[in-house]
Image (cartoon, rainbow, N blue to C red; front, side, top):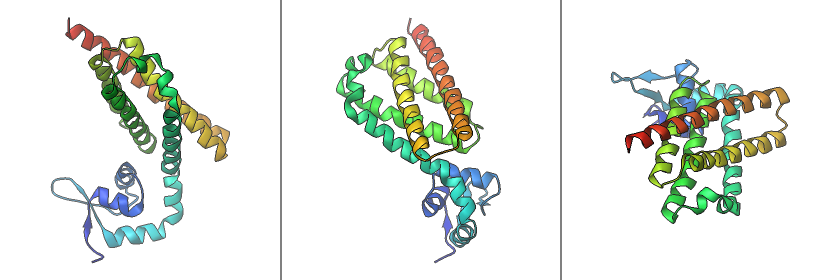
Length: 208
């Protein structure tokens, strides 16, 4: 049945993109979308397939940051699995459960950055605050100092930046465009770090 209704996630799977990308295209009116009475986005399979066929070039251009970020994430995973974490002083203070939580926390940073890159920073402040809060509350939970909390975040931030440099260099991305990307990343991650430190201080005072 070609005219079945799809959710945003279904449409994203059909197109092979991240749901945030489909949301962005929908909000810009670039892709056929219908709204339910409750305000949910719905898509007709036939319309999505037709749109994908007729917009293959622009779709590939729009997908480029997404594909690049996927490569970056793979590269970061390789870096982290090479034992670099074990050398970190803050990591050595954690038990296995805490270590597992921190390894998973890299994911929220990647997802936040991907959302930031694909939505022109519209929800960036909120996203940065949420990630900073997550890192601060986790550090408090595992009795890490605010210095160690910052070190933990910077470890993942630096691994991410190194991977982006590697992937973009190999892809021969123009210098100007790469520079814009690095500026965006540092602006976003600086906001996260500030949120982390502010949240840590508030949590510390709340417990006194």
